[in-house]
Image (cartoon, rainbow, N blue to C red; front, side, top):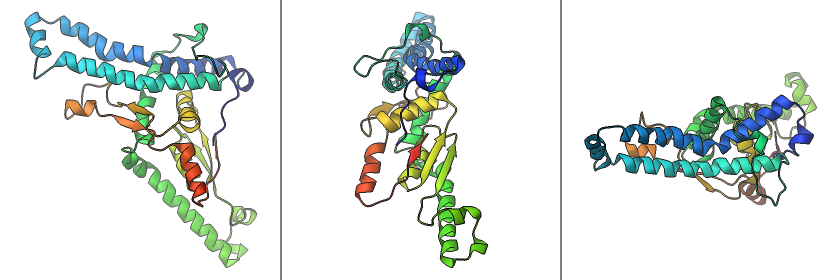
Length: 280
């Protein structure tokens, strides 16, 4: 599995990078407050600014606008459970709090997240739908399927080349690498780590690179610390009131993760399957 970070003081010395990390952590910490403000608070203000006869009509069936806003608030809190857990695990990973202590953002780093950081936190939560929900498999198949096919083709080519025992048709990498050793795969822009995990599960030695600390914090939690499949329920479309076929689409929820990474790899090994290694 991916190794957890040892602590911010030991791992990172650049003050600017430390600031970027805490901006990412703070943006997840501010997710609930910011989302309630932008998704429901301002709408309630505008709603009650209408003439009384108008807002009373919109509050009653079939519109039930205030009920809709209340449901949005509930969905935001469900997303916030994931966001707060990412903050908690991130602070523990960086050694900012002891394992048995409550994870709280240091006062000097609270409130430093900018609009861009808050947008990234929101989009990261939404991205969990594609990478770590059962329903997102259709998108994963479209994105990652060609990668799996290309690697299977390369594996077959490598085996065929070795069986011919003709070094003239082998590449330098083929000659230097034993035929029974797993292929090594680098995943640049690894995001939330699903492709890295799936490749490891299929037996490839895989390393993921990612520049975004929003993605690194979220993937570190889901790969290293999440205790079970379906641990969180997310509402990825809750932040927008537009471009929905029906209001029910906005409130569609998904359980994540669809699999428990550590248990899945253990089950694969127990069943006699070969897994690769996974690093970051």
